[in-house]
Image (cartoon, rainbow, N blue to C red; front, side, top):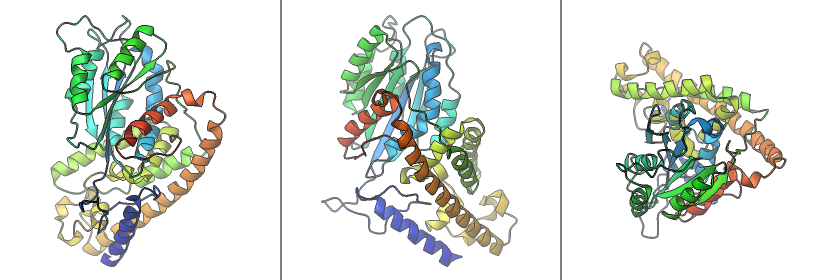
Length: 402
């Protein structure tokens, strides 16, 4: 058992080492582990994995139904696009939903997290309702994004907000901070605010351009429904099903608090398998196959991951801390069970990787038939990220991931 785990760990170390170099490929890694001798900066210090922190601030009033639906379909592709940089970044994502005073809520803030399943489960609950009176609570939404989100203190991180909406801010609420004041703080902290206007409201365009300019961000406009390139493929159903099987190999262990945290992640994953489209689930599988996606796939406290990385010894774990399915097993049965899970993961990931390649080729062909693909949400968002993240040392290919 230990020999097999050591061999697998060595394979993971090799894959992770390749991912540290800009010319390396984004490979599917069971559990990326830092190399024994990580590459160093010229000063001799180990390279720190780059970080992307992105918060989407979404108008969820009644006119935004099309864009919200598009976001539910494409958020995994957006995550894949961001995570496909070299060097492979750590990706954290957050959300701020906003409406206006008198609606069910003014803002709802979901903090940054590398558990994108849980973030996505929150996004799935977003529905378009309320509004209808013109301006919305944009000031409160931006204040929430800047001041209620747990932005890191890393000076080299690419920290970005995308404000998405179709109505200008209320400027007649005297008891709230106005966006120039809020964004002065964002600029001081290095947070870039980009604005995406949905539709053709001229008042919104004027305000959105000003908001973007205050942090040297980018303004662009899309159709009311978002004009995202949402293409289903013949491979989505099988990839989605394989991904569900891969999720089933996760074995969470630890004290009650750790298990409770893991249970919330599993619940979020179960929700997306039950409610998300096959295409969205396939896009999630493609994201999880990246080095940057491994944290979302397995998260903290997965027994197979920690055994593989040499962080724990199976024989030393309190049986009460083991997954329920393993607690009644004899020690030899537990080792065999772990070996089976490792083999199952490798087989599933290999199948997903092969199908993902065929899916990419299909999407490339279909994208050529899309009218004005350069004006789509996908491409404009990608170009913005590529230009801004490039200033942080991240390099991207020429096209977004669909």
